[in-house]
Image 1 (cartoon, rainbow, N blue to C red):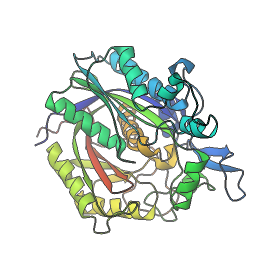
Image 2 (cartoon, helix red, strand yellow; image 1 turned 90 degrees about the horizontal axis):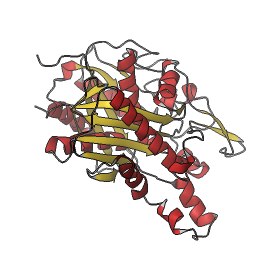
Image 3 (cartoon, rainbow, N blue to C red; image 1 turned 120 degrees about the vertical axis):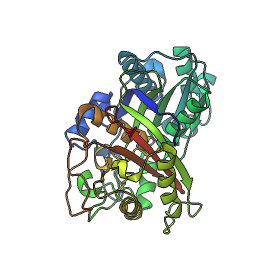
Image 4 (spheres, rainbow, N blue to C red; image 1 turned 90 degrees about the vertical axis):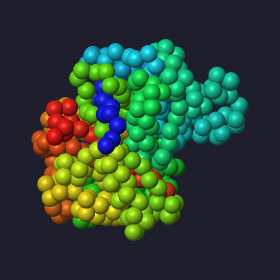
Length: 391
């Protein structure tokens, strides 16, 4: 049996849709892609490239970069949301920040614009410890604070680490934030050269997870925060458990045998103490790339009942890299809260159990899978608050 469930008590978000979880929800519920053509990002004669970038915003006093301002905004919104929903911080509140590429704009300027010569204050702003340190100071939290990274699986990794902290008694509550604002023209170009990022096609046509004709994904950015606790009367979701594994196979490719990704799913079910028959939805990694979609579809078909369905929101929010699975968990949480799962519409023939467009949720659990480049596999089991799994 899995350990006791952990609640998602509050949410905050900054995404390509704008600053705030309501902006995220409104965009998803309308099945509207967040991406638009970005001037100056194009290659090979293109003036622009499709990407879902976080727009300028936030408080300038929170730091010199969109990265720091977005992280602080999302965390504050989540804390305020949780407080309004009845959360009261425990004695020890920890902070986990999932991040893969932090402060790419500031580091670029540090080397190219300033020749490595900046003030001590501006140099400290580059450090990965600075955003979490200033947030801990702002709220007077004294639990542990650290960064965690597992490529595109970082959101799931952070959520599972937070649950392990609470399960072991290290903390009472955790503020979990996942931030990735790394879509520079240079990074976008290299993902396009890898053959996975699509820059010249409208999102719903380019990114068609589990559908014919999918070319890859549109890159996105985001910062999502969650308050995780066992002392909230009105949670969005219960986190029942989960698992991670590693293929130890290749720096980009999934092991074609699917041994470890399958084991990750079965371990997640065991850790959560649930049977495959209780799963109703797979909120998939679903980037629209051939090997990832084939792998997840194969595991889904092998493990879960005929009543289970799947979807991916990457055609809508974009692939937010280190923040991707956190954005997608937030989408599920908001979907259950609004009684509407924000699936994108189908545009081509695809998997027979793929949701098409926003759909009222049926009873059952959701598995959130995330596959990180380099072999990271992860799966988290999520339960809506009104669902009884005690039988």
